[in-house]
Amino acid sequence: MHRPLRRLLSGPALMTAAALLLAGCAGASTEERVDHKQTVPSAKPMTLEKLAAAVDCGKPKVPGKTLDYRQGMCKSGSAEYVLLTFDTAKGQREWLDVAQMYGGVYLVGSRWVLSATPRSAMEAARAKLGGTIEEGRSSGASPSAG
View 1 (tube, one colour):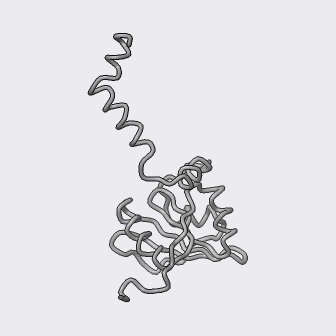
View 2 (view 1 turned 60 degrees about the vertical axis):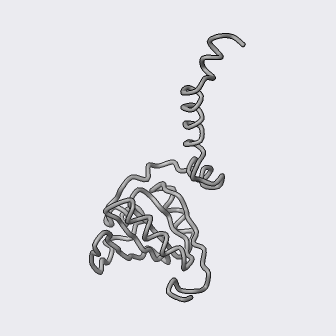
View 3 (view 1 turned 180 degrees about the horizontal axis):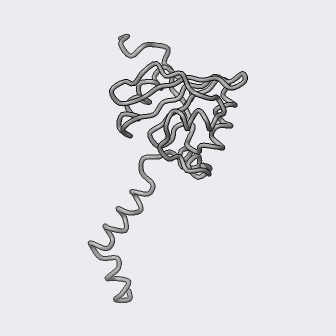
């Protein structure tokens, strides 16, 4: 074997290369990686008002703010939207984990979530907002059942 190649394949260099390769592949299924590549616009943090404007539903009705997120609702034509913005990515993930136990479909961006009925309205919103579509895994039971 050539000396430069042997040095490249030695201990620290090999471990670093392997770690970089694994980090790029870990944590996402094939569907998630493909879905991410199809995201055209930036899915940056937004306000409820900007989310509502993006889906053309005017000023959202905001019942109030919880400790770490705001929720709003609005309508545009026959579509009904639920809009959420989060103070932290961790709070967003925790909310999604609980919400997805009940099923549902969510458009997820950076510290925001949108859900719409009909689903086609949410898919149209994705073209404007970016993000990924996540589907819940309804088990038919509440988290406290058991």
